[in-house]
Length: 100
Image (cartoon, rainbow, N blue to C red; front, side, top):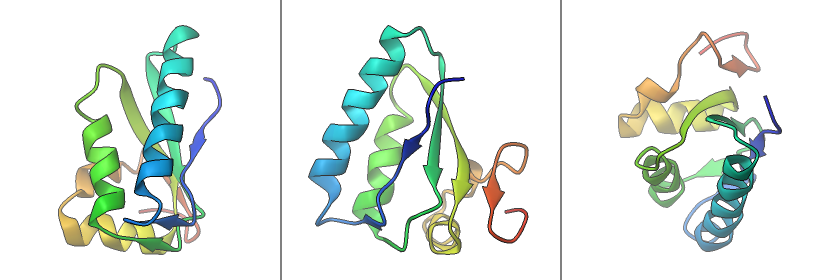
């Protein structure tokens, strides 16, 4: 597997444009290297809102599959609250407390 994409500490409306641009560039680069499954880390996310989660929801509609491999408690709580629990697959996910 290639490198992971590290989501920023502030995954919110204020960072959404920069994060989107970085994420799309990374997805393109990974695709050019033949990677068909991408790994995303949210271990450093300390603040997240709907705009931040919407970026990942949009990624879910692209051709390449992805999975969350690490997540902060803040990110986990936001996913559960907003109905994105499907992203929290315990087979792949590492958290600070040992599991999702």
